Length: 226
Image (cartoon, rainbow, N blue to C red; front, top):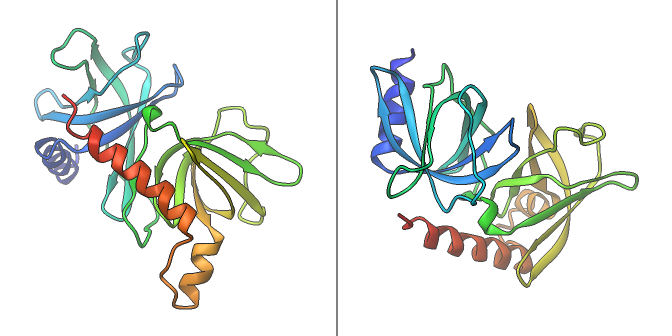
């Protein structure tokens, strides 16, 4: 086991760092929070915030843990060791300490972690295809999404995309493109924001700024749960 990774996860646990959990077996996406980290036996314990009534995580299934770390997102995939739905004050999941952490691409602005309660709906469109991925985090520069297991083809960097973002009364469509991929996870960039940055313009389209700010307010309110 990599001691540097363990120490980093232990620090995240001390900070009660928020995380997004996705399950490859049940297909769920849930908001969580680092709770503790153990060396002997080795595990990471994560609280599940506001779990649905039918929430289940079976030992042995893989769980992807995703968390915003400043301007970057970090993720790892690890098997579930135990799930305690009766743990108080919140249900907890224990996953194995991973062998590596995957750091995704950097953005120039803070990322807002997302979860089912955030109610952000996304569709990605080309002239011939439509996908409905799950959003995992968002900034004014782009969004990290998880594509469905059977999505009818991969997205390439050459695809000219339109992304539709809707949350509450905020709704907008933007040109976008896929910059990076890690398995089912794609980093989607907003073209207009990048065009402005290349011209030295750091402003953000007002509808996009309002949408991201509304999600950030929701995330900040939920951080104090439990």
